[in-house]
Length: 222
Image 1 (tube, rainbow, N blue to C red):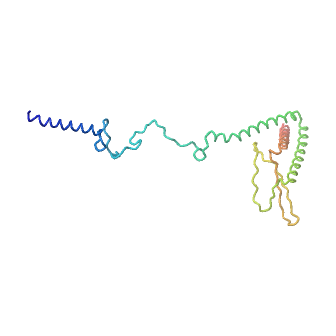
Image 2: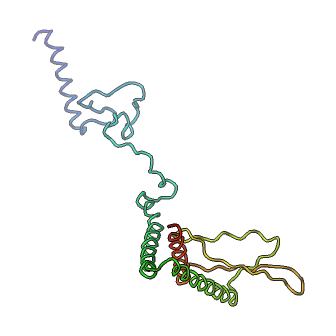
Image 3: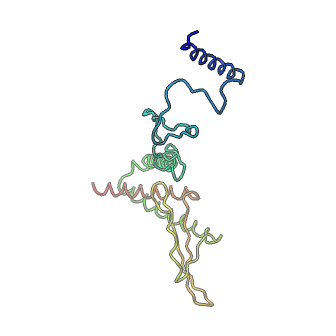
């Protein structure tokens, strides 16, 4: 055998022995892992050679992904959706529309009742209605004073809170009566008002009186 063949045979034997030992040992170990096949690892700044990269690290963001935008106005602080915010004003609007319909029906009834009257007859009807309204107003206020539905105001007291208007913008009718204590000689005032929801018939009389006054004024301008 040629001396040049001996080194080749020795190398072959050593390689075969290494393969046999590797197979018996169960494959690669932690000390000598086999290299992974595929794309080479990316090296550079930020690369962590000592462990796995965190999820999403190094990924290119998808330009189609939706970016959360600012919340609609009124939702960040109150949690109210836009449709709920729109519905918040629906109740006053509905009440105002109902008040307009009721007023139209009322005015139509006045037209049917007084529309045929001449000027002098309208004046007489207005005088009668004004007397009716005054008597009814006094009667209702007396009832409220008698059952204690009033506010006592003395000199130096803070101003009273303003009364709330109705859907048509009218303020409720109010009344005040000045009194003097006979013992202390201190003066005070008793204030009361007629709520709209408690006296709808009375406010219908006021509407009738106002209609007559307007119709009479129109006739006198002719």
